[in-house]
Length: 224
Image 1 (cartoon, rainbow, N blue to C red):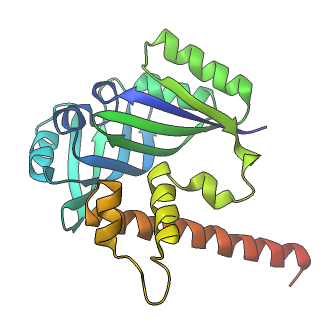
Image 2 (cartoon, rainbow, N blue to C red):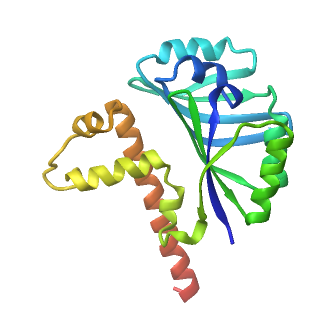
C-alpha cells in the first residue's frame, strides 16, 4: 500500500542550501522538481519574504546553483527556476531506486520539510538505506498510509496550504460578506499577506483539480 513520509532536512544539505540557510525568514515552497539527469535537477519554486532581495543575490552567486531565472513576481514573492548540480546524485538515486516521488517541499526557518510518496514500506526502507549510505540528513517526522484520507486533494495539499485553508474556512473568509481579510489571516498565521494569498490560490487550484478529475473519472466509469 502506498505510504507518505514527512521528513525534515537541514537546509545546507538540500537544494538552494546557501540562500535558504542565510535567509531563514524567507519561505521557499517548491512547486515541482524536474530530474533532468542523474547529476542535475531543476526546481521550480516560490520564495517569499521581506529579505527576498538578499536571498536573490545569494542565490545568483551560489556556485552550486546554475541558470537562475525569475519567472514571475508578486509583491514580496518571486517564482524561480534554477538548476542544482552539486551533490545531487545521491538524492536522485535514492528517489529513483525507491520509486518515490516528492509531493511537497517547503523551507522555513532554515529547515526543509519534505513529503515523499513511496509505493510501499519496502521502498521506504530502500530509500532509508541509500540515505544512510550517502549520509543524507533526512529525519523522519511522520508516516501514514496514502489512502488514510478519503480526499485525494488533502494528500496533495502542503501542510501550509491545508492550515491556511482550514483557518480561512473557520474564520469565515469564504462567507458573503467575508468576516475576515487576508491581512487578518496573515496576522494570525504569522506570515505575510502575500504568502496567505499564494497558499489560498494554490490550495484552491489543487482542490478544484481533484474535484474535476474525480467528476471526469466518475463519468468515464459510468459511460456518460
